[in-house]
Amino acid sequence: MISFNQIILPLTLVLAFLAVVALVQGAVSAFLGSHARTRRVNRRMTLLHQGLPGREVYDTLIHRHAAPTIGGQRVHNLFNRATVFLGQAGLAMAPQTLLAYAAGGGGALWIVATLATRAMGAGGGAAEAMMSLFGAFTASGLGVWMWVSNKRNRRLRKLEDQLPLALDIVVRAIRAGHPVISAVQLVTEEMGDPIGTEFGIIVDETTYGFEFREALGNFARRTGSEDAHFFAVSVGIQSETGGNLAEILGNLTSVIRGRATLGKRIKSLGSEGRMSATILSILPVFLISAICISQPQFYTGKFADPIFWPVVGAILVVYGVGQYAMHRIVDFKY
Image 1 (cartoon, helix red, strand yellow):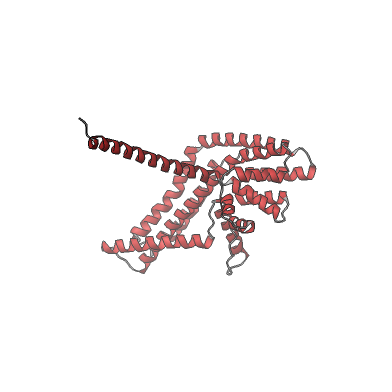
Image 2 (cartoon, one colour):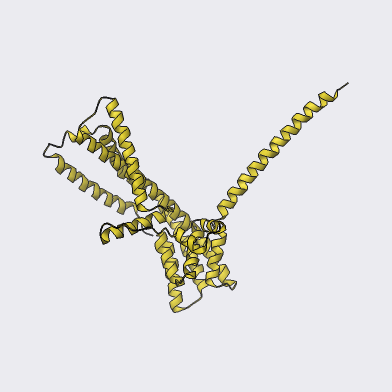
């Protein structure tokens, strides 16, 4: 005869197994649901839901940083261009902060390389230390530049992929009778980053006194997208000459999608050339930096040779000409 203990033990194990399965399923569902909500909500909506006033959200998103107090107009222009470039990459940091990170990475690389060469008994003098420091800073700066450029290119591609869908929403809203600002507001509530936040900034600027076409011009300059420039120009022309805005934006959406299709075909055909150009551009700099870091005496031993510096200058000129030629070859206009 089966006892009660013989029944309760298997039943307990089965219930424990079911409880673990339910717990795991609930945790996975909660994680996936949270992840889906995060993807649906853009950064601007997240800041607004956190309770920040609209003006503070706007100031946070446009990345205003204090300009350097030293230097003339050229330094200020370079600072502004760097700020715009970082904003296009989706980075809120100031250019000084990025330079500090690059300098810190170069300094750390130089210290590690110096300790490694000293441990191997291959130390040198001041010239070797300076050459190693130059190589470390060059490698760190190039790495930071590649990282920021990659983030900017990925964000720009995503924005241009989202723009036709955003314009479709605007067109449908206008045809349904919504004002154009309300139509743009729908995009800010329905689409994720980067287009949702960028359209939200357009709405904020029109709220704080900008004209709509001026806000669109700021949007085009802020993102650096040619399609965004087409959008701004189309609305600017329509505001001056009149016409059916919904029809204009519908035609613009078709043009943007056609350009995107053509651009993808061109990029697929020229992908091998672009990759070759990238390798030929980056590899020499990284190799020279690695030699400067690990074997600085390879170059410092040639400083006294009278032909060394003219050859360095000639190599830099040839490298620059090669960069210009490769850029013209692989940079197709369409």
